[in-house]
Length: 167
Image (tube, rainbow, N blue to C red; front, side, top):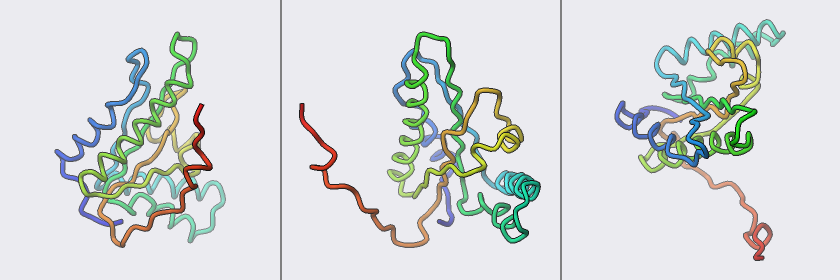
């Protein structure tokens, strides 16, 4: 993946599409963190610091430092599902997943490519704290967005007759 990434207006359109998801109770149980420009470097510094504390070898620390530089734009989708309310937790979590999927679809519709990832840092308490997650919030995904630097290959998919039944 390489540049260019989306323009300001395209980013706004992508985020708007992301927010147009099923949301039982109109809770908006998710939010966005946008990483672009030097914010990607600052996030890399956090990953380097935390991975070094965890005992990663120097070459791995430097790989983590460059992690968000793989794309010109990364959108963090943050889930903040609430318990003890009428809307089931599962439906709120599914809504955050739908946000991620809509962002992927909108990105590809605009001619860019996107990759939805979570890696160790999506779950690490110190990383979550350093990027401003509040108690109870979780990373639904980090979505890397840019221009394809190579021809995309379709991954193998199961035959439909193996995964579809009719009632």
